[in-house]
Length: 218
Image 1 (cartoon, one colour):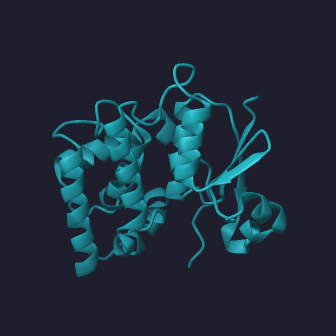
Image 2 (cartoon, rainbow, N blue to C red):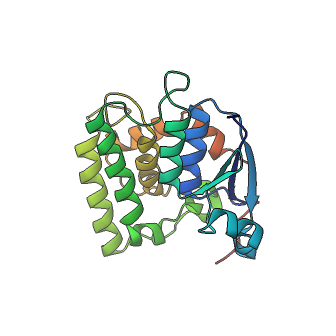
Image 3 (tube, one colour):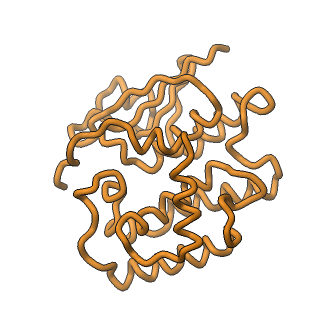
C-alpha cells in the first residue's frame, strides 16, 4: 500500500471538518495533495465527485483509490492505517481517553447550532466577517454550556484535554475560537487553551491557506 493521499476541501478553507482532517494528516507527517471544490457553485454535486464520495461532502479523503468522506470516519481510518509507532497518533492511545475524545468530537458536531449561526467560521478566517452584534440569549446559553464542558475537560493552565494532545483538542479550540476571534467574553484559561491550539504548526498551516479576499455574501 502506498501513501498517495488526496484531501478534498472547499475553496474558502473555512470548514471545521476539513480542518480536523487537514490537521490529522499534517500531525501524522503525511504528504498529501489538496483539491478544492466551490461549494457555492455546486462542485460537490458533480457526479465524478458525488458518486465516489457517496455523501457528496467535504472533507473527502482519497487513499490509493479508496474514497472516504465524513471527518470522524476519516480520522479513525488515518489512525488505523498510518498507525503508531510509524506515525504519530492523533487519537489517545488510552481507551478511556480515546472514548472521551470521540465523545467530544461527536458532541461538537451535533450541538451549538445557534452559536454556529451567529459566530460562523468565516468570522475566524476572514477579518471583515467578524460579528458586530452581541450573542442572542440562545447563543449565549450555548456558549455557557461550551464553557462548562470545556472547563470539565481542560485543567486550568493545560494545553490539551487528556494526558497528551489529540485532534479533538483542535475541534474544541475551533468552537472556542468562534467566540475568541469575535471578542466575546471567554474565560481566560479557555481562551489561552484555544490560542495554544491555534499556534500548532498544523493548525497554523490551515489558518494561513490562501483564501479569497472575502467570502461570498450568503
